[in-house]
Length: 111
Image (tube, rainbow, N blue to C red; front, side, top):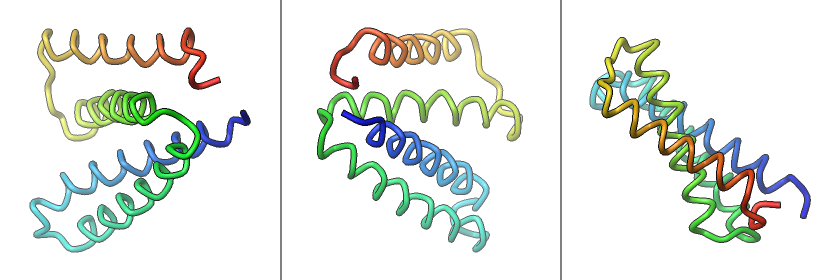
């Protein structure tokens, strides 16, 4: 298998994170520009997500999509939105990241 499905999954994750960040910035769709960017980013995210689902198991794709997305948006929230994370939240995010690493390093499903 080529790396194209994983590249597209990566693009889907980035688009989803952009969409989520813009969704937060839209203040409940009260600000039109971040709201429009959010909708466009989610549309791109779902398109790019649909392609890896043709060749990879849905459970693995969704685990990677959600896990990496959670880690990235949590980091963005902490750095740019000044959202604080307590120790249990950080521990949980670290476990999610560990799961993503295990899938990528040890599962033959994505290779």
